[in-house]
Image (cartoon, rainbow, N blue to C red; front, side, top):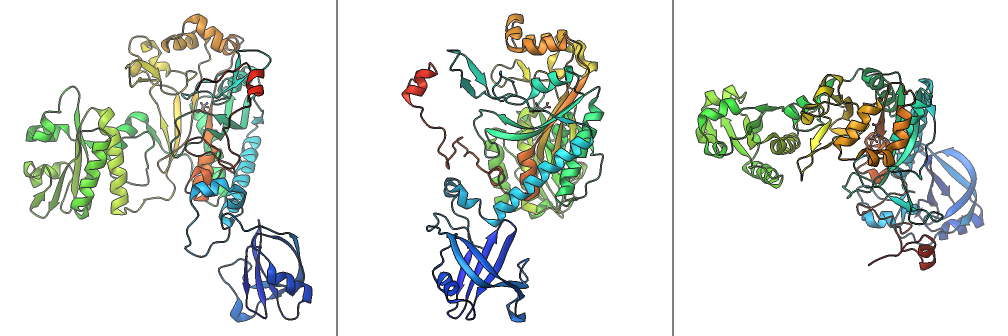
Length: 559
Ligand code: ASP
């Protein structure tokens, strides 16, 4: 019983199940017992109704409700299970705010009853089935891989599970099925997929969950083009399932170009405002803000904001503040209105100099200076804020792209040493293998990401299938040969057993569902999610283990 309105002579009940809501009318002609039950019915009780479906009187029709033309005129009404007053309301009036998320997570069984949540999970089910169907039609086999396993590095910490029968030894929960799916290729299954649960112990950000679902796939005798084709087929079918027609192939952009033009490896291509390198034009102007920073490969980069003249002083100050928080030199700006040129560095610019940067009448220029690793995130942020504050209209509703040619290594933020940008099973670009030892940072990887409206949907790569190269790469990560053997011996012996060329991908299924459901958070498409501090509020996990359990697991807890 979703909601009840008692008008004295007649009681209207909104009856809810997963298909929606229908109105039940318990009027003066209904049996005495039905009227008595209707009078005392509490919200969220489970009821049984017999009755007649009838057209509503013309003035009672509700065009906002799918069943708004009809009602059920009750001939019997019984309570199957009464509900105590719900801890959080399920029915909500128009514009009424949701309860605090902590309460929603704590009383999840009630929160999940809300029609919005029901429709999110109905969509999730349909997307899962569609992914299965699409991949099965492409002759991928669904094969399950273990959850109690050995560490699979994907850049996070492992969740460890102590072994009771082998004191001091631990299983790891998989960060992904990566090594297993590669071994399935070695085993000759040709094409594999799995709706895989993955576990990553990270300091959680708002859009991450410690356990999540991937549409994980791998195929043999393929190159990058084949894998991109398979993944496009899956994504197009998922968007189709949600009612959107998407054109293929998706555009491509190299990682280098994405960083240069958008400052990020997940560019939102629905909008313009690309980043430009203005070093050559700005250097001769001897602007103090830039001059002292222009050394050691630093560049002046900025955005020409068409129509940016309408950005207020407050807007610009807030943008500059956001830039500062990201650790840059801050933001310099110029606005041009007719002959007037204003802004923090306005007095150094002429209309001509601005024209050379593509900044015309009514436009603004926002710029910063420094090494790319600092200016890229700043300008990415500034670009997104500009788009938001100007209310810029997107050129398309759905902008997919492939980001390709990622670097194989990135510098460790603390030591500067090369660490793997993706996982260590990713093949170096064949043209760059020769520089693996001499100039690792210049090596590209056969690694690709799918990006949609500024969101990363997933990653994949062509794998290393030569055990010798795989050993070299482990060496780069600082592993001794013995270490590599202990940790990844089962993969190395697989690669020596005749490994077909193979590659794959993993689509972040929760994120896809969130985007297609128009949900505001991953937690709205995961039935029992964790909070940002990795707690399950509903069931209350993690929780201390009993001394007896700890003893059986040979574990002593130090506080
Ligand atoms: N194992 C990778 C991941 O989970 C995906 C892949 O390379 O196929 O991100």
